[in-house]
Image 1 (tube, rainbow, N blue to C red):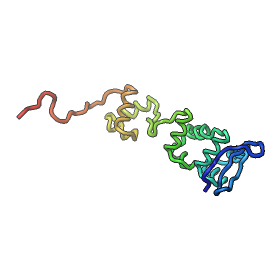
Image 2: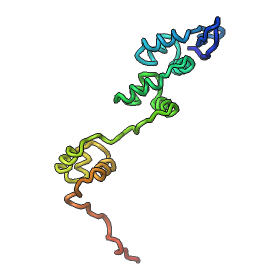
Image 3: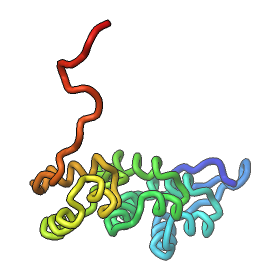
Image 4: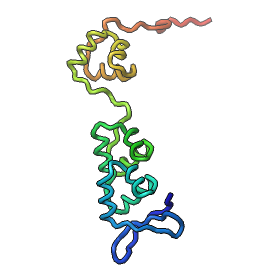
Length: 174
């Protein structure tokens, strides 16, 4: 696999050069890189086509002035999981997230709250009647269900939670 990528003028035209082996450089014209980039579905396919690793493809695209991070972000916003998108493009989710943040793009939390209309939440709450039932119905963590309950001003549970242990002020000393 190639180990180096850099941009330089070759015969008066700016090229991105890739080292396949020591002292073996292949120049790519910027328009050639753009053409191949727009023909490929993802960065991994582009890496296979040029025969370089995905990190070097990202470096090549950066040197060629192609805003591949914006294209990846558009896929991310189209309801694609960050992990799946990263895997398809030959990187880890943390790398993709860092790429977005470095380019000033917003990255959402991994497990966001489900977007459920208020009326539907009220209906689910009436059926469940307790936070634990609400948790099971929504399929989320207890704290998330409690926050959704609080944020949507749903009525208090029919049966207030029981206190475990001694009531305050009844501690005896021996």
